[in-house]
Image 1 (tube, one colour):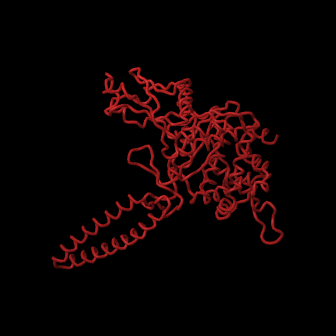
Image 2: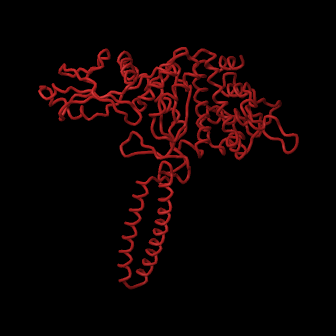
Image 3: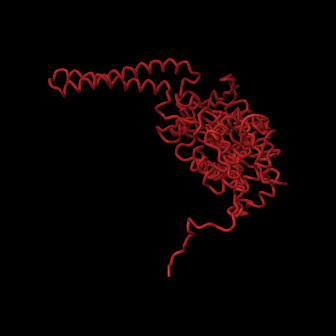
Length: 479
């Protein structure tokens, strides 16, 4: 008696044909994709080919190709060649497409030609979440993360990198020239072969130097004095690791603090987050459909102008202020040790003396007030702990009251940054794990934005399936 589970004979026929429906259970997530795309108004979203041409070869319906993409990104299959293979052998995808199997070029062209429509379709998921009242907890966490582009670091050039590369080439030429002189003084076939090889290397390096000199002019002419050869929109960006960096894009995301759904996202090629607080906060507030929104962000988003702009948008920011002064590092009092008294428009120093406003200037478009004491600093017993100058001067922005109010909110909510980390950083980690080591596969900012939208839709669909379940989610989509 055999003690193993036996499979069917591959050559055994069946009396009745089997249905694809039998292979896809009622709780299979692929049914959510089918319902989601079927409920979209593809023509209103701007998809090409919704109304077929009356002549020529029949085309694939855009809804079919969109289903293939959504299925692929949910199952971490972003390659169009892999999607072509899966359509031919994957039973779930056969069920989803009705056994249609477009070739990879058709799949790739659909994403290339329908970028804005695909992004609009991905945004249609958020109104569903709003209809289900998932955003009653009006708190969102904002963060940015660097994602790799299809551009190697050696194919990205800044002024500093180009200067270093040219110095390396010059050093290599000198090294090979010295070796060539040594080879010329020797006799024999081996020396002649070595001389020929060294001559070829020197010629190749000189050609490379000419290319670098041409690139140098292009780098200086570029608006940000940086060019990328493979993906022209990718930019070199610093990361948290010392001496490290990535050539890629800066992805901004606003994540709902309760259900961890990505409510708004944006892809930029600017390497910092300082100008994104009001923009992302306003997008998140509009998508969540709330009257006011608490926004949690790290100190990389701190900007006085951005915090001020949030107040007019109905966004309440929680952003720690970075300590840019060197006073604390040198063991002296920092600005936070001086208490501002708004009723009298003065500062009270740690020694209890009062600093009055003495001057007002405009710096970088900002109105700055300066405060100091004319008489007490010279005889103050704490002067050594305060300043090496004649007197300690305090700068105050004309709108710094909004910064003080935000700091007071942070003091009343000490767990704000912990909530931010648990909300948005996990989201970015999940997305990068799905995308693999290479991250983006497309080139140029426009196409990368489309690719990111598909990743965000896949993430949100999986989150909603985990929260509600397949059947309730499909019922909500049909409602």
